[in-house]
Length: 360
Image (cartoon, rainbow, N blue to C red; front, top):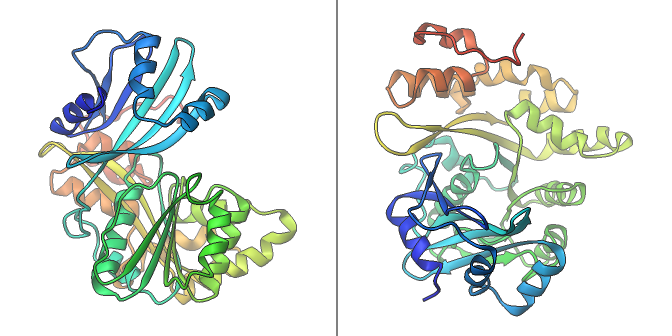
């Protein structure tokens, strides 16, 4: 048993999502969105380096010492998997770990909208899950893939950096590929995947133009492709994806995206006030004919209106999702107000209006 495993056990027992180990500081864990100190001494660089190096290989140590950063996944049997990042800072070495539960929660257990089940059963297309870092995108995607795994008889390939949720074969055959270990890049793995008879491809993150292009081309050739972007809202996601490309290509990319897009799920994570935990509010855009037409004609500013009126298709705005949680007493009114788009709608729930010095 590695020395660091005791920190992971403590983390798991306290339902912490993240562990932070930095030279010159006490260990800290993030519980329900807030950092808390662990009752442990301040970590010296040499001691922490020994703890962290115990769970990586010699080639990984060499890579880290040359580059100053390292991403990988670590597993404690019968406990959980961890997404890890090692880095250097002013006082020495540091590391951040995110817990990835062994048990994949279902769409129903996560209280996610039922339309996500429909996305899992699509024959082809492009579906994006978006939101800031730590908003639960990977958890949502894992639930969608799990539903497909139960209800379809398909070939699924996941491409991640690093591998996070590990799916067991149910009715599908699933291959997990890790960038840097099993393939050089997302783009290289995507090219290879098209020769591996996939029905569903999960691309952990769209980081560059080439990956974006290949993901859309894979969807255009009859595959169902899921991926993530660090954007907020359906409109900003569409604009960001198109703006990744050179100006002279954007008209073609806009047309391609309009053809392949099937849905955008944009989520924001809230701390619950009714019980310990967090809950995700989702904006959902289903790519109806009208939605795709607006994308094709470069009228993305009108997408929010279609989302507001598209409830019968399973669409919902972020504000509607927040309002539902607020009315059920799940989240704090001030938290709801600060994360809402149309803040006026949430003012009646507040005892006082929180001031944001950036809004003048």
